[in-house]
Image (tube, rainbow, N blue to C red; front, side, top):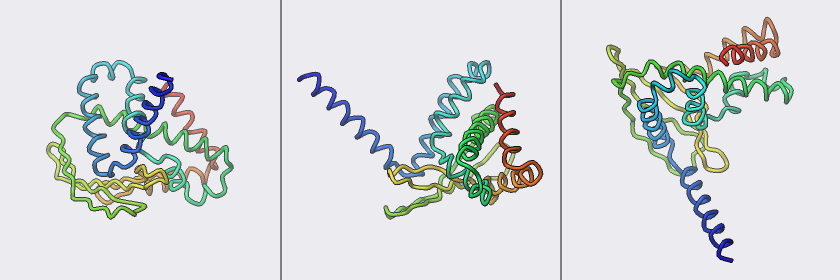
Length: 203
């Protein structure tokens, strides 16, 4: 009986903590993610430079888990998503996720500790399906430029990123245009095979 009570308490605590994470506002989520990423990168930089697998694990755990990968994949493929089979959608989403991990992993080594991110005020009424977290990023020797994170609220209440605009340029739009040209010449399967080869090479 005591064991069952303990299990019940643990389950309640897990559900409660999960609910808190789901209810976290998107601007707070960005702040927490950035702080967590910087802390781990600072503490483990030598280890991560030696072991790319550990770096990929860090990026997936800290960054990519907050991205609505399926939503982004759908937006990137646009009309090609509608004509794709379930297998093609799954393979593309998986490989696009791997691409994001590699891209963020490579960018992390440019971090110097002198970068600065300022958050603009965010107000939510509580019933929004989408939100935009607006920030200004200042890099050493470069003018400040806007980086905006577009969030989608899932049915669970959890907020996830579905696009990022850097100085007004949407990453989804960039990938969509680039991949549309590849699909035009090699088809969707050709694009997926190209991404799969890149993943294999990185390993």
